[in-house]
Length: 53
Length: 218
Length: 242
Image (cartoon, rainbow over all chains, first blue to last red):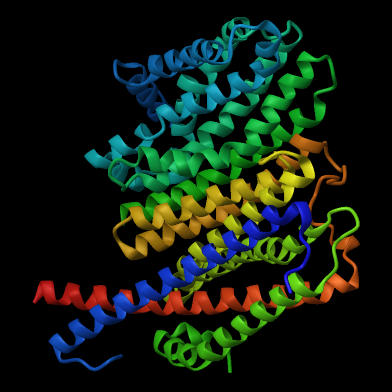
């Protein structure tokens, strides 16, 4: 199934690996930061008795 | 405006004003580079234009964070902002003062560095001309950067990060003028582009810098 | 219905909540489909061998690296003129995503260049320009982080984005001049779009679409976070003063 990458296997595979890693990192970071802020906001809003704006 | 210029020049030349420091740093670069890359003449003469220019960039950076910060902290910047001179004029004058004690001084000191770095004889004139034309841009771009970070505590490193990428076009064209001149080639194109960048920056960046100062003075 | 309705944070949150799942889903589908197609089902290039497969990452990420900055420029301008917080928060949100794409473009460019040029890094005009773009992204993000007051930070970073854009363009021309002389074609360029045959072109389009959608999805997510953060800071400030 794997195509014949020949002598360029390292270049091609590491390109894909690095790209996936970076994309995954920014997705994970964005998700994690979002979750953290959402949680903090919910806490403060509950504390102040306000509904979500 | 002349009073402001004289005041800033006086402040800069006083001890601790950074005037001598910039020149000393500039000289240091010319000493350290051969120590780092080896004394071989042909290597040095090939990289001399670039080294002098990079040295000029870094030396200009040194006194930038002081440009507005002192006046910001003691409140004089607020006064200057409400003075009859437009804030853009204040920025231009301060940039001019900065240039006189850094860029101009470096331009005049550059031949000494050229000598240390084995610059080919044909290159000296172009070195002085390119620095003379290009260092005003460094001061004005630097003023913009300084205006952005004036409210940031210890903004020196941030200032470098913001300003150095903006210096890239001036650096490229300035060094290219010297390289071509030293090789006896026609340096007109990079020279014109260098001058164009300086002219454009001097005309437009004081407005951007003044806007940034007003934001920080709010 | 005007686009300015979305300048209202509440409207933005409502609308983005609705469209985000679809955009994110489409992004994943096109990315996966495009990359699988490109990686497994396209032939090798005559000159470049299997390294041509890197094109499916390098070209879309490079395009988005630039587009992200352009988006930041436009939204910063909108903030400076019309003072819509959603706009400047979108710019702030886009920066890390744009930086990521720039890094992907740089790394894939260098990895592609190594077998082609025999060196891990070459001061090719395009790679160099992207390296400089990285510095612009870093500077923008650093300024946001350094300034305490959010509106001051918004104004300063927007002005920086404006001035930075001019200098980024100048740098592009300067770097071309520096490496190849003016008006000479970039002979070492990896972006041979004019030579890309159809068999590569369609999966490339799918990948480009995937990257665009991924950018939009990520910016929407991050902008929502920024809006919530702003609300959080406002509520906390109110608590402190009470």
